[in-house]
Length: 200
Image 1 (cartoon, rainbow, N blue to C red):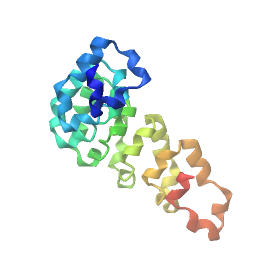
Image 2 (cartoon, one colour; image 1 turned 120 degrees about the vertical axis):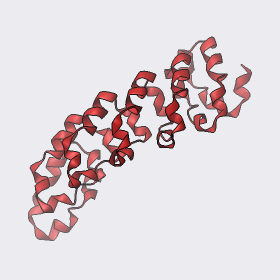
Image 3 (cartoon, helix red, strand yellow; image 1 turned 180 degrees about the horizontal axis):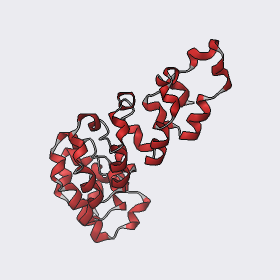
């Protein structure tokens, strides 16, 4: 295929290309959308997880003309499909400024139902928890987030400073263990009780 002479598509030459037929590959590579700079970063080998019809429907979505959604245009989008993407982007929550920072490509590791449940949690009305609304939240499930935010320890001012997005690197059990390490009982170690404990 002469298309492989084009540097933009050479990254697509990966072993998962065999998931697609010659006709599919030909149609995908000849799509006029690839002339648009905002779509070119989608040209990675993960595209072969999708098919021409799905790709066409996704690229023709009017949402991509809105700057707030354009940062979601990364190759991880191919792990989703048109219906899921449409439902996620049409959620009314994205009109709320406190949720807009969650619109990054890490969102595609989650699904509509999970996202909906997470965003509708009443805990986000609590100012203490609003700083936890960062894209790393998508590493956690609704159940994990619910358990973490329900921990009575957050009523204690000693622990409130730990409420940063670092928390999502851990699960509920790990957080619980870290908060109850025996040396926090000694004053000389309390200055080490910082959000970086969740990075260890």
